[in-house]
Image (tube, rainbow, N blue to C red):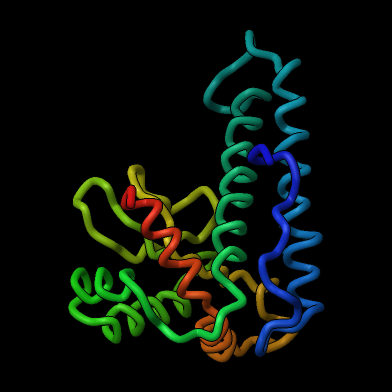
Length: 198
């Protein structure tokens, strides 16, 4: 499958433990799929974009480029989120050692990550930073704001309200616990190994 061409299928069966089938269906089948469609629509509009009038205050080309980044990051972050769900939530593998090394312990990392989940308006991302060779937690209030150049996402948490409001209302903390209870650490380790070139 070519990137941005069609929605990736879920690797797990709906519903998850504490995350309903309705939430996953709306989140994956409508919202995520909608970002793919919008990305493709933007690519079509580029073909006829008015380049001679390009400027930094407002121009068609500028707006298309900004929204291309928003839609592309929405697709990539949602795929990273869905790719690591469906497990039993029991931490295991090389990623645990790496997290412990870079954060001091798994518990220290987890406490920070969960706290960032309550702080962010959009995403929390455990990413490997090729710039310093370490894992870091990053916060992104929007799809295209907060990402760090030269990093690769390993574990991604969506904290936009669409990810939890049907199941938990405004109780985001309980949703974050459900997210951790459904993590597939085998998938996370596979992603980490790929990033590390193993």
